Image (cartoon, rainbow, N blue to C red; front, side, top):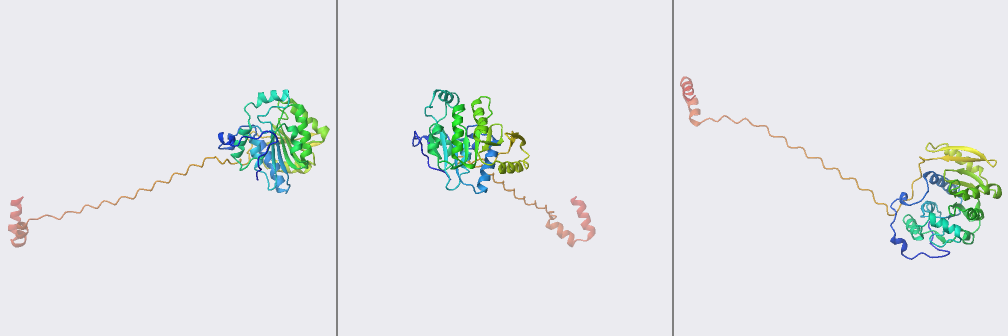
Length: 318
């Protein structure tokens, strides 16, 4: 189920998304959403659905829409998906403006919409604004999964963590991107700082993301370990962090779940029809032995003359 697009700030132009090239495959959408994280997203979201847990989805920071497209495929009946991003709006402060200029100078809402509509019938609810406004756009305790991938600045990430805690169900899942990237120390400081100060409980980390909850992590940790024991495409280990087990996953060769299918994906080429087998050639007729051609005088001589004359005549003809 998809949602109608709205905006807290600047609406997109009516036909702008239709003017941009449409991706033919999920892999064509630009972004950093690795197969191992697609695998972990799928595990959490599928487990929630199978357990009958309903709730909305939220993404803070969308870039070109790769992870949003993936999240949108897990939207259930009556659930709402909200995406919050500045897109091409002015940043609220100078440091954030400089970051946007360095990292996302080509980012536009039009590109996001064109990509998303290549895989879904309708857009999510789009809040084109700083993520600091999200608690006025999404109801408290309404979300079951929140993906935080917006600013890399400590002050902004700190605010995004507080917003995620307010908007999540007690046992909801939050995923933080770039929590360990060398160029994003503010994300790392804010995320790990939330463990002792807010009660955030990390469950699993990959090379790019940390997944946690403010609820009881034990049932999810146990179930995830059982599932990982069946996977041969990823490595996993367990560390103790803040008195709780933390799962580590490495999966450079992880087999991602089936990707969303683009409505613009070319149809497979039909298999060429097999050429009909040549009909067997008719057997050549056996040459008939031509009957001996004999002249009438010879036949009369053989039948009427005495044998002695017949032999004489034969010798003469020869």
